Length: 242
Image (cartoon, rainbow, N blue to C red):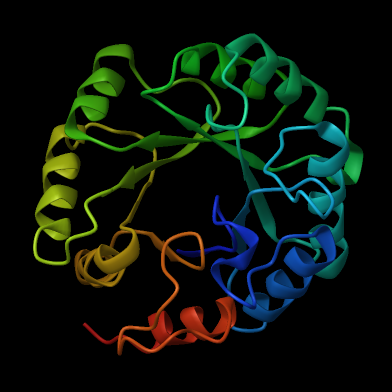
């Protein structure tokens, strides 16, 4: 699987084509769907001028519903990041509220294993029928997950090499994968970020591991040129032959 990650936590001025509002996310989702992408991950925002990331059910529901209307059948994931809402209790309240959004209900949400309250957030998501993507950023996170066990409702593990150095990003990805072990009973999606994004993506393709691409992870194509949009990054990823 190649997932498209459309915006992430980037500020609005990070790229002229960065999708922020619900209609912009829907536009980009439609564009990558034409290339065969069936899953997107987005970070819903408040309205402009602030356009800050939010877990507010109103704005999450608007973003998800807009994407679903544009691309019926697309898997739509959102974040539950601690940097958006530090209070685990409020994150849980938000996730529970998402379960009542109808067409605006996300299919999956990402939950980072290193964040306080992650087990309870996973439990809340499962209770309202939202799948979980478990964010594992380090080999230590992988050990934590193995010790606890994969929570009910987990759709996949996101193995994230956060080392941006292209010379060492793949080595870090390998360390995380080894720490996860071979006993996981859910798929793993492996990806990098910034200068490490393309080396890790190529490694994932070579090893037959699910991966992802989009403005959340990288703004430039493998040739170093600034991408024109999320669809441009997806085309570049699909053109890689390993």
